[in-house]
Image (cartoon, rainbow, N blue to C red):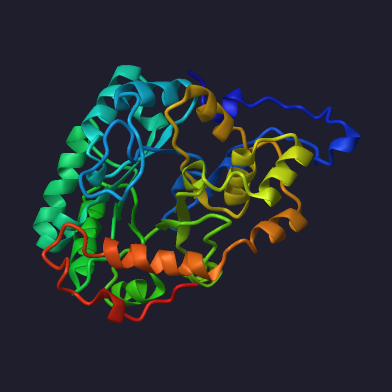
Length: 336
């Protein structure tokens, strides 16, 4: 199957009344982001959380109606080449089967994975073993990008990151980064960095747009990957999203996806439905106006920041001996 860029076709004959800018055929500059190590990262990928498997300690929500292998094969057929995986997701072996069965050359894929809190807590050797196990599950000799999934406190995440630095130097990892890091977590990590993270994967959407934190990481040369951008579809009934979608003859999901990549954040939608895979990917042949972007940037409310803090407090100790013992609420954390 051709790549998503190859599937997108020019359509410049837009009705003047539609209010859409002229569509242009996307290229590498508009469909990827350049990382601080020179690697180009696709702005569009396929999320694999709760695809075929719901992890035991996962947050509530999600239903399984199809197997992971079938879904990944559909995503590959739809043109996806970047996959956001994680040890925690419990489905990497099945994802690996699908990738192998597809016969798509490894160099055409961009595989992202994340080291889970159990290994992060247990130290550098545990992290190393988990990364090598991830590679085996995904049936590859290297990962394009590997992240520390959560900044486990008491310095655990710092030691774990050092293990990723070693694996990067050994060329097991093309790039390394972090996930769910606050400014304070990164400042702690910075004190002993040898190799700068290329990305921080955090929840980003018009309803959780933590601009102060985002601007901090961008100033540090660390790009952003977003997750829960579509909020499991729950926020797509928002009146502003719907009005922009109607005016631009797009779907609400495409408007949110375009908001994300137009800001320069990697977008990892997930769905079990082939038609929605294609819908979610069709975001590179139109642009939102500056006015639309500004309006969407203002949808975050204080309650969303409170919910973020609750999720963060849970995540940094989940599945570790620190759970229920470490006073997460006492930590100073920049929420916005």
